[in-house]
Structure formats: structure tokens, C-alpha cells
Amino acid sequence: MCRELESGGFTPQQVDAVLAALIKVSRSYEQVNRETYATKSELMERMLNHKAEFATLRSELQLLEKADFKMLKTEYFNVDRRVEALVEAGKANSAKYNAQLQELENKLLKALLGSVATIITILLAAWRFLAPR
Image (cartoon, rainbow, N blue to C red):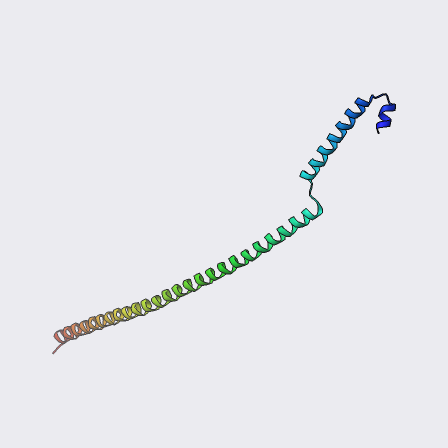
């Protein structure tokens, strides 16, 4: 390259200056490449790190899923117990209301029979007094 520059009319000082500039540009380019681009081994290392991180995340997610399932299962059983308690309370209230209803029916029947007996007594008394002797 030096011969080509000198044959092109460059002085030795100009050739040295151009070569120094080219070396500087080349080194700068190499530094940028080293800082910007990764080597195959660096990429493999990063990939292995990512795989390890993904494995850790996967195991953590599985633990969270198990914990969530246990919480949901516990909550389901608590709700189930509360529903059973409400059903039992409803049955108890239903039995209580049925007993009260039966009592009211009995009182109503007694009152009705008493009214009918009173009416019959009044009719018999009226017939006795009004009947010809």
C-alpha cells in the first residue's frame, strides 16, 4: 500500500500520515465491534443464563400455582361449610315455621269448630223457642 501511495505521488510523510490514520480507524472499528457485537461464546453464555433464569421462573410459577390451588381449595371448603351451615339453619327455621304454621292451623280449626258449635247451639235454641208446642 505504501508503494502504491508513493507511486501515486505521495511523499513518505504523507504515506506515514495516511497509514497512521488508517490504523487508527481500524483500531477504532475493532473496539466498536468488540463493544457492540458478542462472540459466539458470549452468546452461548447468555443463552445458558437465560435458560437458567427461565427454569427458575418456571419453578417459581409452579410453586405459585400450587399455593394458589391450595388457597382456592381451602376457600372452597370454607364456602362449602358456610353453605352447609346455612342449609342446616334453613332446615331448622323451616321446621320451626312448619310447627308454628301447624299451631296456627290448629287454632284456626278450633276457632272454626267453636264458631260452628255456637251457630248450631243458637239455631237449636231458636228452633226450640220457635217450634210449636
